[in-house]
Length: 338
Image (cartoon, rainbow, N blue to C red; front, side, top):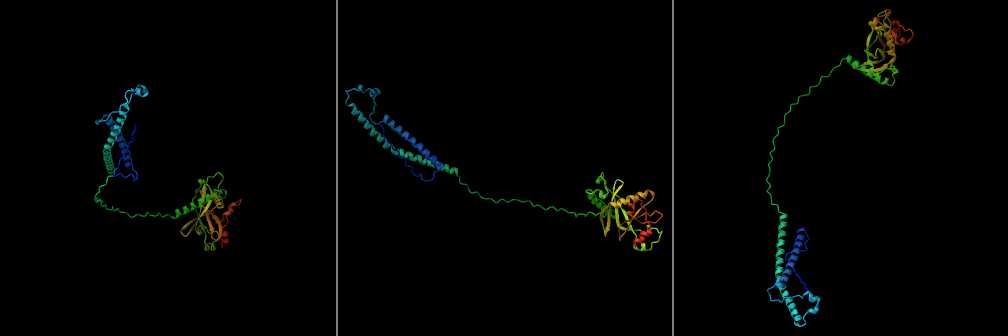
């Protein structure tokens, strides 16, 4: 025998239409669990009331298993037994209904109280999770900045380095070195054109001592008399030649001219170096000879003179390329310059 039981729980103040949140989810689960627990307790109370109640309700004694399986053993002499059992069942059913009706308001009241308690706990937990920040009074902070006094640095005026004033001789040598460097650069491609041989290392080339160049002015040439000494008539010109040496051999001669205040490097000449080698070989300084280079500004090329010779002479350097070179009389050359 079964009886459907309905338990209606009215949750006052709970709005389930709002969006679900983790707190309300757990609240629902707790309520459902609590409702199931109340249902079980109520059902147990109901059974206990039926079996051990104080009301004079007739107990229903179920028949023995043997009576169910063997109906033949039921005593036929008890015709009032079925009516008594029916009366007892009806009485028990009505008593159970009254118990349920009597317990229903109490159960609903207990459920309402529990719902309110759980909702209050959830509200308190939510308020605890989101504490309201107390207003903090802002206190102005005064920062003390130390006063820094700029350090005065005394700057000494830069003392200009004294410019080195080079002498004319130094400037002349520097111009000769520049002229030699230009010749070495060309000789790297054309060594024979500048008097270098196959076994020469251009890095071993050195600059020799400058050879001054002289001339005889026009008035001296016009008044020259045969046998007159040539050396007193020679005037230096702003022109020099530097021998480029490879050991004791002169490979070429480089020119330097003075233009205004500047010393200008010039070109190199292999032919002049060859002629000068023969001149110094034939009239060496060890024998007391000091050949000098002479030029005529109006005539290209170089001349030389050996003042120590008895006969005064002025000779074109090209004469040294002949088979038997010799000097030329000074009056003849000077006459040709007029």
